Image 1 (cartoon, rainbow, N blue to C red):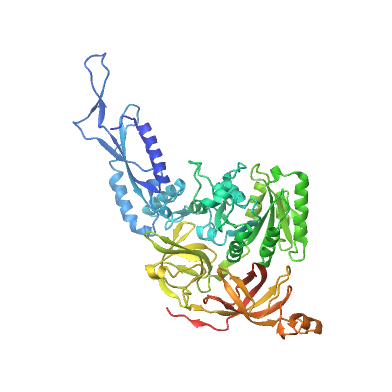
Image 2 (image 1 turned 30 degrees about the horizontal axis):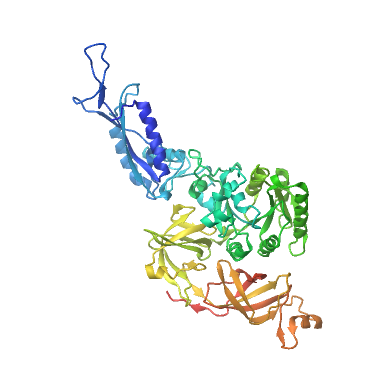
Length: 621
């Protein structure tokens, strides 16, 4: 039995509850007990009293609320069902509630009932849970359930009428691609922004966000990962470290629930051998903006030029970030800046550099980023320019209006596949259009398979930023748990789609392309390239080519330029526009008109837009 008084015992209980929360558990019951131990009565005044067990009376037992608002676990049931239960508890417990003796020297013992729960069922904010308990008490008294700005179905606090978690994760979520050369400091920059802790100059920031062991050892990112940077409505960045345990990073659900606006930073590879991963990340990432990081100590390389061309080809507005300015000589920085400015003013980029030195400069370039390329100088070691960069990110408007595609049929692009023990097959990706309510009646189609057919299944549950939800809508990155057996699970692959109706797959598609200017390349019939269409990536060859003549006039010079006179066939060279019918080399894919495409054969050779599907294979469920 405990020989502590009430204050020491209560403080120990608080530490135990915080420890339980860190282990994905909650305190379901907190029982305080007094009257079990008392001081013995001595006959001689020189003898010291001894604690003895009390046997002639019952101990005093009191149930107290836990530190985290009675440890309520978030559910999706109707709160009105528990109103009568609250009323009965109130009438029965308030009448004869025992009172503990909190004076020093009174022995107190505590019993805690701890239950381990899923991470997504926990609300890490004590204030939110306290308000949730207060809201339920108001409902028991018959008051309005939304006066305190708490959603009873989710337990999420809303700061104002428009700050809901759904809007934060969709319409107020800005997706930013972070690209640059291999030594530019992309992962270090993301680690510094998301954790609000400066780097030590030896890779502490990048180590905290890297995914694989070989990435930590080599310092090179080889996979495309996403990280959340949250802002409050005042523009203050949310620290990515826990306030109680500073060595613990906040999870995505904690950052999302505290944020008014989110910045999704996509960390892409910079090394040349991982170029196809970077191209796929830009093609399928639905980025609103791109941060092009340049090492101040070295002039931009051919990879920097390639990343600039890649972002501009997809119509992504760019922001230039000079890194490592703390250890850069002035003459080296001047040389690097001149080279970057020369690349920006080149005809294939066509941007005017605009240096950002104050918040007023940020307000000046907003709305003009189609022609301007903001330039910010930063250091993750000294913190120079980091606050200015955060202000810039908070000020960026949302470019992709995915909320306008809610009325379209549901379309979910699969980026990755997981096998979660106890859950089954889970696909992660991006909701490109429409909306879906998961559950036993959420019938969906997943595919296409190798033969072009689709699997008919059910979406059991969904997560957004590790938060359990029943509804996903366009513009959100989500995970869906699918009801598939072991054999069907093996057929899943990246590049598939999840649809609610009319699934179709095709092996051929028409596209209007533009061959990029650069290194000389010749494109003719049977030309084979690697095609990126959103999340789809596969080899395809040109089946038919037709020159696009916008002026409806072909001169003799241009005719000889586009045609090979010996073989009498059309040949495309840099700068040409044409309509091309592509055919996938391996399997059918889900393609629809309007999708943006990119094709490469080592380097990016051209971009285009899917204009039509000539042949559609009917899919069977």
